[in-house]
Length: 254
Image (cartoon, rainbow, N blue to C red; front, side, top):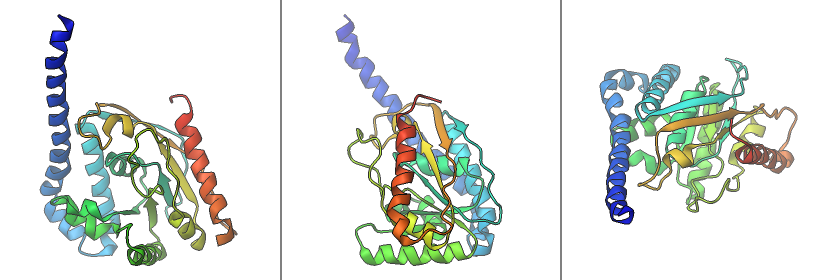
């Protein structure tokens, strides 16, 4: 009897997950439509970026709450409001964007893949406020590096997911890091600020019929200074950051 009920139960569960996933895109787009006049003003000039960033944080928190997630953050570090940082984290999910925005209250600019710019409405503001990269193009990667340098010189911080994308194999705990974030951090002598996202793979991976509401745990690690470091120290900095996040992912729950 149980086996006869199993297939219908699985079918309805998959329907519920699919509707919940679609709801994510509704939550993603509707607040943008409601704030459209304000967002158009705040993206008309880079001098309004702090105001745009505030709106982006509210949008991210709205999505997290609306999807039935709640954050648990460990670690508290004072940020110099006049300083710049290189924020880095592991990358499992599109939800990582919202989780980074909701967690960090210091204005930063994302370096992200250009494919997200195709999402209706969201993509328009994504193109105007983020630094887009085509990871298959060497020319694009160099342009991204130049643009990131320009934004850092303006006093902004930068956020990069240094794995360079989400691994196809979900059994990978943490993929190898690319060096771009660490090269920029050393060039500008700004601290690397590592964060670990524990649950986004479980809660909202790129596998469509998967996930569930629940806790999203974040660990904010001690910042890694780069003062006095040169590009010869880049690999050591990259490996140290990777080790910090990897060890945290393997540690017991918060």
